[in-house]
Length: 118
Image 1 (cartoon, rainbow, N blue to C red):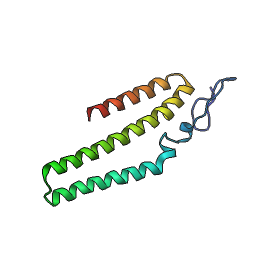
Image 2: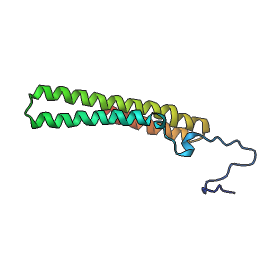
Image 3: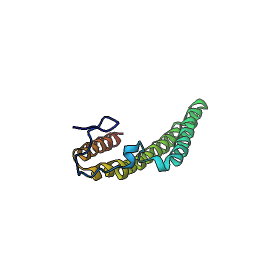
Image 4: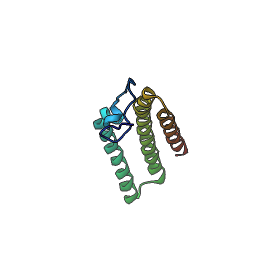
């Protein structure tokens, strides 16, 4: 059996090889990276605001309201990232076929499970 430069098995004679962005190390969030970083900085600011509220002895319910807003912001970010994972990584695996699709679906299912537990 022949191998590629990366050491992976070479495709068999006449087999069609599907190359995707994922093969080149490009993740599903890549095209939205700047927007994601901006969003995470905003969430980071919310968390710092929570610290400031505690430091300034702000009323408990007001702090809890901000905790809820921060939690929702993180959940929204996570759902966007999951959507991108499904559209990019899982879709790439589906194009390739084989057992890779099963692994990607299982990975996504576990991630969804973790999100539901939060």
